[in-house]
Amino acid sequence: MKKTASSAPPTRIELLAALALGCASPRAAAEPPAESFVPPPRQEPVRLVLETAAGEHLDLADHRGKALLVLAFTTDTIASQAMMRTLERVARRHPESLAVVAIAGDERPPGTLRLVLDAYRDVADLERVTIALASAEVRVGTSALGEIERVPTLFFLNRAGVIVRRIDTVLSEGQVEALIAPAIPRGE
Picture (spheres, rainbow, N blue to C red):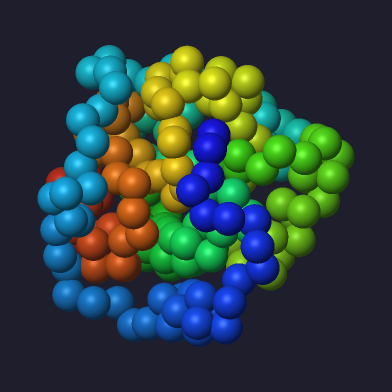
């Protein structure tokens, strides 16, 4: 996975923007920006097995029957951090019908990466988002997710496990709610 943000430390303005995004109250549901729509790479259910930060195997197919959001991210991009916090808040509102998997594309030795991801999970207070490590096929773009050129990239898989949207931008809580609404049972 490539990232477009530089590796330089965040500026004060970037930090304030991230804080504002993380603390903002949910906005009215709005459709994700149309210009960010990228057609899904495939029309069949996704088959992808990843290793979680805890060292367990995670098959995305295990989430069939639920809406599934898959986020490609890196720990050093503020946009990824903002998106992760947004997804956590949305996932907490839909514990029975939404699963969220975040795939870390950081390039560090696996042991070091696991330590970083444990700290990341704790600092971000992630309870509902499962963090996984990018596999070799995800990194080179041959997985069912296709090539990932920037982070964050969000994939929305319907209850059948088919990618229905791929969005390469940061969304508000309202936009995420609008995105998943067709796959969430009424009243939840």
